[in-house]
Each structure stands twice: as structure tokens, then as C-alpha cells.
Length: 196
Image (cartoon, rainbow, N blue to C red; front, side, top):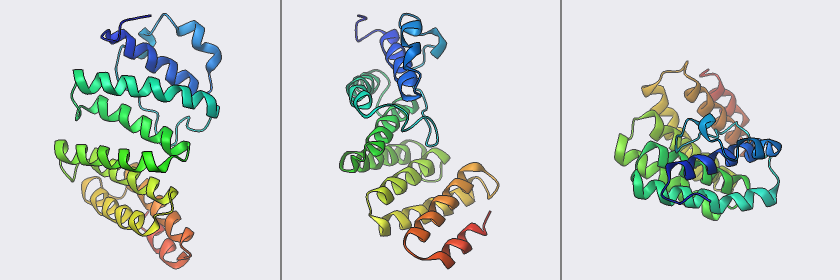
């Protein structure tokens, strides 16, 4: 085992995490002693539409402790607002969301949003993406009114920051329209979709 202070410790764990989350467990032995394919970076973006949901429930539970260790190390070495720390925190929040552990996911997404807002400002794309992720998680936990409000806030921010042709804007439009349909407001959903 590598000492926890070693940068390779984080890279190796993240490499294993990526393989498991992408359903490629069979490659674990191949990469166990070689983390260079990860580029030695601390943060790995799993993505909202990435390999979520492909690993078994039990395996995801095992990964939780690994991810928490990585986040603790990153917060100490890089700081709580570092982009790599926030990426890892976001990955853990997505894992909680995927496991439907909303009581843990929602506060974590709030923290990510607040840290992004503090370090980058309310109009930064990463802050707006964090706000949209929080809204999506609130939607999953059936807190629909707050989710709608946050989606609308993120959408207005994306429209100003990126314009209507950027993927973040279009994703936010789709998420808001889906929420409105879930709430039985199909006409509003169609109107929102007409923005893209």
C-alpha cells in the first residue's frame, strides 16, 4: 500500500474508481500498479451523463470510503475551493444521488455550489453547472418547487454567460423542461424547449 500523502495514492484510487464506475472492473489488475494513464491528476470528471449507474450497488458502496479519503486529502493539500477538490466532491455527490441517498447528496451539492460561487463568482460557468446539479438532485428528491427555481436561475445565468448555443445552456433547458413535464405543466415545458 502507498502512503496516504503520496500523490500516486490519489491517482491510483481515482484510476480504480473510474474503472469500476465505468463497468470495466476486469481492467483493475492491469492498472493497479500503473496510474500514469490518469496523468497523475487528482481530479477525474465522471460527468452527469457518464458512466453513472453501471457499477453494482455493493461496489459503489465500497467506493464511498475511497472517495472520502481522496476528498479529505485534496482539501488538506489543495484547499476546499480547488477545482480538483470540487470535482472529487461532485463525483461523491453524484454517487450519493445515484444511490438515492438524497439526504447526503443535496447538502453536498449545496456545498459545491457555495464553494464555486465564493471562489469564482455567481456568473461563472462552473458555478452555474453546480447550481444546475443541485437543482437536478432536488428534483430527484421530489423537492420540485425549489428545483424549478434553481433551474430557472441557472438557465438565466447560462443564457448570459454562454449564450443559447452552448451545451450547458441546452442541458439546463432540457432539465427544466423535464421538470415542468413531471409537474404536469406541458405547455410551459414546450415553451422552455423552444429556447433551443
